[in-house]
Each structure stands twice: as C-alpha cells, then as structure tokens.
Amino acid sequence: GITATMVNLHEKGLIRKLLDVQSFDRNAAQSLARNPNHIEISANQYANWGSKGASVDRLDVVVLSALEVDTHFNVNVLTGSDGVLRGASGGHCDTAVAAALSIIVAPLVRGRIPTLVDNVTTCVTPGSSVDILVTDHGIAVNPARPELAERLKAAGMKVVSIEWLRERAQLLTGQPRPIEFTDRVIAVVRYRDGSVIDVVHQVKE
Image (cartoon, rainbow, N blue to C red; front, side, top):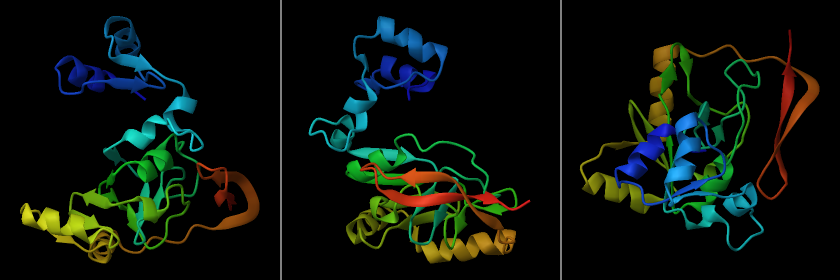
C-alpha cells in the first residue's frame, strides 16, 4: 500500500516509481492523478506466485514490520501477544521471499511485552524468507546469510545473535504467561502458494 510519505519521497526524486495496489490515504489517491510514475497495479500483478511477471520478484530490498519474531526468524503479523487477531498479512510473506534482501524492523519490546520470543504465536512469514532483524537493541542476521553479517561488520555495524536479543528481551520483560487456547480453529494461515502453514485457535476465556 502507498502512503503520503512514499508520495513525498517520490516527488522529491528519491523513489523513481510507485507501484500501487491500494492507496492508504487521500494524498496517495490524489497522487495517482498527477504523477505518471505512480502506477496502479492489480494484486495479481503485484504478487501472484504463479506469474513470471509478478512485481515482487523485481524487489531488491524489502523492509517489513512484525508483531512477533522468534529465534528461528519466523514472523507473526496476525495475532497479538494475547493471541487475538490484530491485523492482516497483506503481502508480507510474498515480499519477504521474493526480495533479494528481506529486513524485519521491530522494537525488541513493546511496553512490557517482548517482540522477540522463542516461538511466534502465529507463523505468517517463515524464517527461511527473512535475512535480517533490526531492533533498537541490536541487529541479528539469519545464519543462512553469513555474508550479510560480514558485510555489516565491515561497515562498522554491531551484529549480535538472535539468541542474545531474545535473552535481552526476557531480561527486560520477564517471561510472559503462556496464552491458553481452545481446540476451536477460527482462522487458517495460507502461504502464497495456497498451502496451510498455521492455524489460529480461539483464546480461552
């Protein structure tokens, strides 16, 4: 989705083209009328895994957010720390796997709630698709991409293990009480190819 911030960067010459599946605010919608390189595309053109012309396959870098990340780099953008549905995945898993470099940016903790956990409540984007986790307490690189860690270190960046970040989060927040669920499935999480990668259970009252 395109926002006014992206339009502003585009109009300053910092972004050459905007490919827009949905406009998130009024400024983004108005930009379609005045900027020839702000181009409306369909969701099919954007991320159809069966298409050789999908726009996501041309991504060099993607920067994504997360509600939870675990020590296997799996990402949850669907359910909150209480297990309740909070958002939608959009093109999270599509862009993460298709981009040459996939970066997740999130605070290590939110209030007294850790963002980095042992296992995500709901897996939306598999850790195999994630290259780097950037937090306010350090940067962790997926062990599958050691060359990225070396390049970051060569550039003077401090790289830590994701296990170190997990311990840091736990020191700050303590160990949260486990969420209790019923056996009732209220949602199914499908990967971009249609396969089921997780389910969401109803929270026990």
